[in-house]
Length: 157
Image (spheres, rainbow, N blue to C red):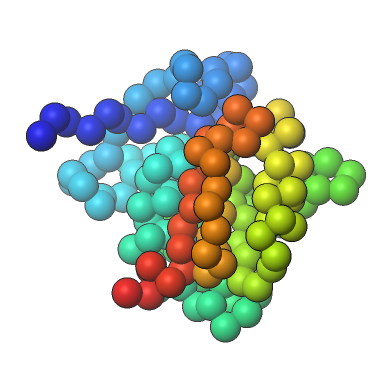
């Protein structure tokens, strides 16, 4: 089996230099091999997804899920902002560099997609991660931004 492609950085430093995910940017290395903590605060969406999939997420309600996500990001030393304002009407649950993370426990599929579509239209978003217990198909990208889904049901197994 071939080596996996290294993750591409989406940190604020790369974004300030106008390096866009994934076309340009420096390679992010992990210390200690697979599952290790990032070598610094800048991290790829794939690394965040892997971290969230390994975490025990509380799913009793959206506030508990958001708390679990915050705990996981903090434990992983991922710089993030909660309730990050993207525009006058859009506030995403978490923003880690250019990676937006949205938590949904009980929400209609169409509503989830439309919300992610609005978020993906913002320049400050390079990739989106949806953390949800709702079974849904999601395109690989919305508005040209990669989309990742973390199933809370899968995380609980």
